[in-house]
Amino acid sequence: MIYKSHLDLVLDDVFVEEHTILPHANLYMKIEGLSIGGSIKIKPALKMISRLEIQGKLKPGSKIIESSSGNLGIALSIICAAKGYEFNCVVDPNILPSSERLIKSYGANIIKVTHKDENGGFLNSRIRKIRAMCQQDESLTWLNQYENIDNIEAHYLTTAQSIANHFPTLDFVFVGAGTTGTLGGISHFFSRNLPHTKIIAVDSVGSITFGGVSGKRKIPGLGASKEPPISRLSSFHDIIRVEEQKTLAMCHAFARKGMLIGGSTGTVLSGVQQYSDQIPKGSTVVAISPDLGERYLNTIYSPQWLNEHFPDETFKPNQPLHTIIKGI
Image (cartoon, rainbow, N blue to C red; front, side, top):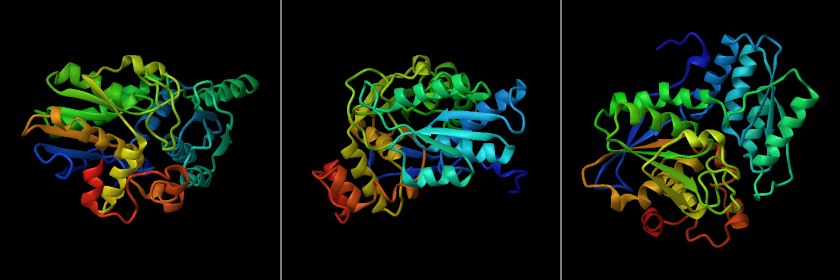
């Protein structure tokens, strides 16, 4: 297939059968990491930028600012480089070193906040930094993924539609909750078009996206230390909260199968496993895999990083696959 632009490399119809963690049902991973930018975030990034262009608010040389834990920043840095916009990405110390290098490689500016917010995370600190910078420089355009309806609409038009096209009689969809753009788009689509499908939200322990108790989190991607305003537009039948140790174990279990998955994917699949007793035999299930694992070589897949941040983990990097799966 020939594409007119590298920005058209959004592969929205890749699904992989998975038999290990849900043997009594038909589980399919929706692989988003093969698109340009390496993650699902290219879709809302393109949609948010496109809306501003249609409104005449962007022109070559315009300056864009956004907060990101990594993947959205990479997607936006690619788009801004291609279109001639200046991109300023506000991040925090939890960003993956590889993601930070990628963002810089595309010519974007990195602004890193280092002070934790009142909830013990960095999201409020990042947003406050953006507000201060926009007040100082009125030429900055803030995309604000946390309130931007295009974050939801992008997944309504693409991610959800693709799933429905491939699985018109789908029983369950498991969706990770970050900004909740993916969750919002999928839940709106299915409630309107295929209401029999159950939407299961997956969050990280320590996240307060949907309430709960704030706690330390080391794996970027899912979860938040502040409720994203657009989360109120999401609906779901149930929610699963996953401990980061289980995310790590799932990631290493898949590595033993020859597939490196990202932290968000490991969390979603752990959510599927935790919920497995409530999934009837023969059900058809889709789990969203937001990205793959190559960017996590210095963290999730690094023995040194594991020993530093998770010294009491119940698995080791050289542990056999069946014992990892059993211990999750």
